[in-house]
Length: 273
Image (tube, rainbow, N blue to C red):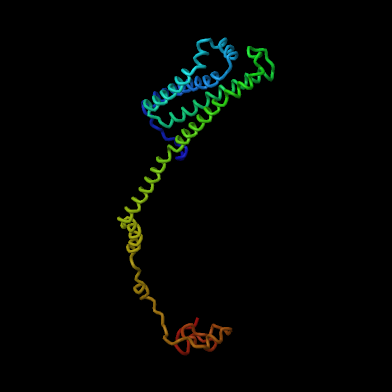
């Protein structure tokens, strides 16, 4: 099995699951607070007749609370409170920033889409709803109240992008430490090899000593029983010139050319082949 197929077991801490659960809870609380803030900014600038329709759906008390300044400041304070508790309890600053941005992006986007859908249903498709008598003023009401929610949504998107970017670069210091540790181990290996040159020289020495164990062959002792007459005279030029002639009469020792049918050389006395 190759090393690529092996998955390393990442040890999990005991409190990670509980911190993750708390992170989800704080995200839901921030999302709910941001939704209340978006509704407050949307309802507060609407006319009294349209607020009467909201009162029939949400109730007089909730409609009055959402359209007042008290809801605005309570929602902002709740967002700051849940964000601070998220960081203080879980110690996850990156996740808290990302969750804050995502919550503050989703909440106004939901309000804007719901109001746009309501306006299309009433004004374009002419559905008979409680807002049908206000079909002529709904576009202007939407334009007057959507600006603040658009700014709220864009601000949340910027915060979310910063949090996601921080979470992405979280592994960069860890990877740089790994690269440094690998370079340090390589340098340590090189220094150890330089400090102990005998480790590399040992195989070479063993290779050279292997030939020293082979006994030397004494050729002079083995050739003492062979008696070969050797002449010190150089080979005559006649042999080189008469290479095309019959070599049976030429002496193989001194190169002297003899008469045919002669068994011994007339110059050195060697037996002809």
